Length: 83
Ligand SMILES: [Zn+2]
Image 1 (cartoon, rainbow, N blue to C red):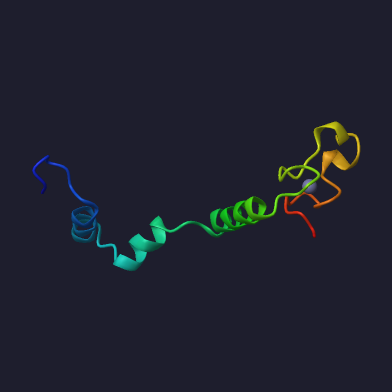
Image 2: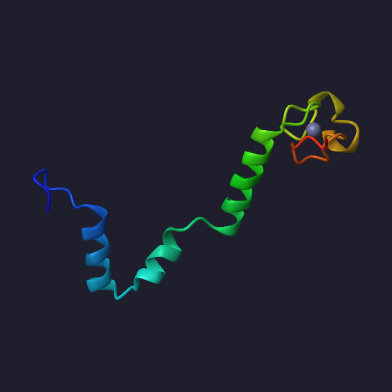
């Protein structure tokens, strides 16, 4: 217990382990990003590093909504410039 009365994360893990019987692996799994979140983060990093010159990385072109739903024809909708 800290002076301010707040528990630090290590104390919380210890309490959860005691009361809930969770293993460290189960807690780590629960706190880890999901595969979808990881993919989203990787895509966001790729877009940031090399944004599509046509759509600016959004993957869609609002003024081309009538063509294939506005999906950017340069990057195919993923927002990464296909150089
Ligand atoms: Zn694009």
